[in-house]
Length: 256
Image 1: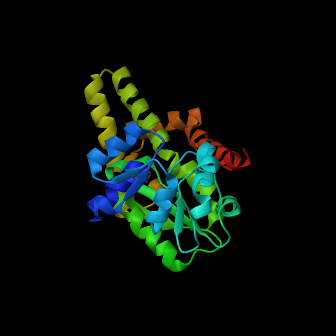
Image 2 (image 1 turned 60 degrees about the horizontal axis):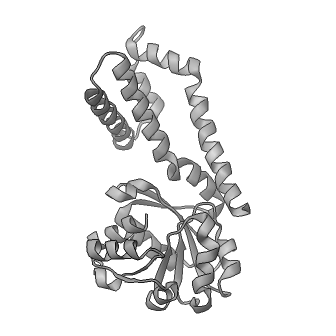
Image 3 (image 1 turned 90 degrees about the vertical axis):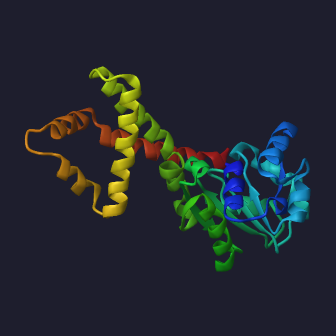
């Protein structure tokens, strides 16, 4: 995700040499340096001293260790952005010096192809100007929404984890096509294009998905027969419970 953000910023015109990246892996740093032209360091403190905006792109289980490496040099004039799932701004504010500005962000992996969905929430000391800065950064990798932080765990369960659910749906559609007699490559192509097209229909027509569904289902037809099977299997409830389970897991990450 860190690389996706870097690449997006560079595509938007940010000069690579103004970006400083730290990582525990020397190999990873060398790869980013050669691929993107960014500056690199193995010391997190260098990044914090250098940058006006610091993006903390680590896993939730690593966030405390990462914060401890640079908290002593973080100052309230810096903007700290965290993409760690489930970790609240108040948790980070307890570790960093008083008055530091913290923004919690939930992006998703389609940011890698500039099609991400990102949600931002500001901490106690964040201003509207700070949120605007973060919004511009993440617009480099897709769309951005600003919400109250209390909604961020649900966002994690839906859009943060959502690409994984959609991949399973695409795979299942393709498997169904193979079961019905289609070659594997054809079935996968049709499944991908069908999901893409259906999503665009919702986005561009602005009609409710239920209305679009009704437009496809003629009386006694194939679509309504397939939908009846989905309802019988409880697919709608399964997907809803999946989002709830992921949301609960996001809440648990902070407790751990």
